[in-house]
Length: 390
Image 1 (cartoon, rainbow, N blue to C red):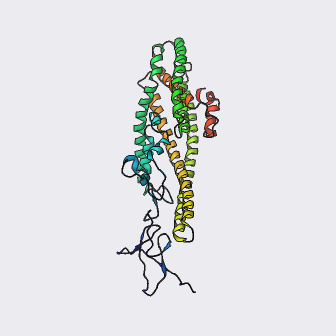
Image 2: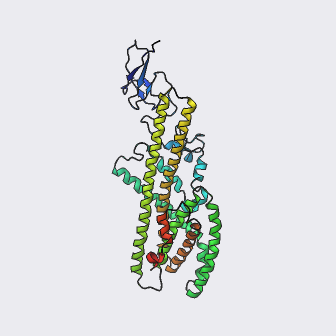
Image 3: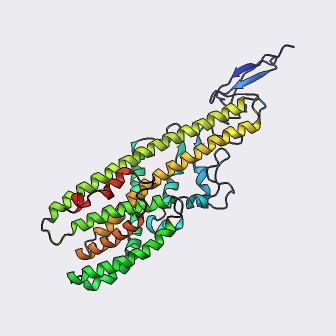
């Protein structure tokens, strides 16, 4: 028995009337067909999918075949709007609270503030498409840059106050001895030892949070470099202060730039992998809609595997943005703490010693983990006096 030939009808963009919607991309299409034709499929002009005129539309719709990431974050700012904070196409975040916990949670807010929500607010503005981030023009980029700088400035001011509050116990302990060099050295050692014990207890709690070790390392990394820089600038036994300041400022800057260049490269690699993952999901979704010979369970397995890959790449991309923002913010925090001209230089030195103590505790026992970049560890393990102090 001869099977009836199926005719594929090309569709076009409708001028006025919405004739039918593509079940894959959800866009309205128009088609012309002779009444005598019995078996036919419509070819979507937008996504090239072929479908029956009465085929049910898929739950996930996107007029331009893009994934709107803003749906992922809606529940962060509006809890209770929906039980599911993301669309049916990409169940990236099952529980928003759980997601925040993956990046330190509330315990880290004393050191990094609400940086995670700042990044979330920025991600809400973008759609994941072939270019991932796209701007209308240079002016748009400049506006976003100014706004981000303002956010960093406001956050760093708040965190600088918190950091000064945290190291206040050490400052108060040594303040009576600031003019007694011999006694000060003894009291510094005693105070820093006690201070490290307190920070050590805190670090034990922090490292068990999501990305806890990575966050401790990144906080300690900036604290260590900036406090070493501040201590190097304060040298009461050397009259060539200006020369020394210029020397280690240049060396500090070059190390930071080299490190951040590596991070930016990793960030763009993450973006590329993320877009590739989303592209695979879109293609598989289209194939599932077209291919009627594959069982639904098999289709689901294929989609679940690709979605899981997208989840991992999305999280990696978010982490890279988060990490770079944390570092930029912490550099500004340290600048505010160490560049305070209203405070005596010797007290600035004590601030640097306390913050260096935090850094040493935070980076303790993690030097050999795979989480640490070798280029950054070279800074810690190198002869610091060669490029910071002498």
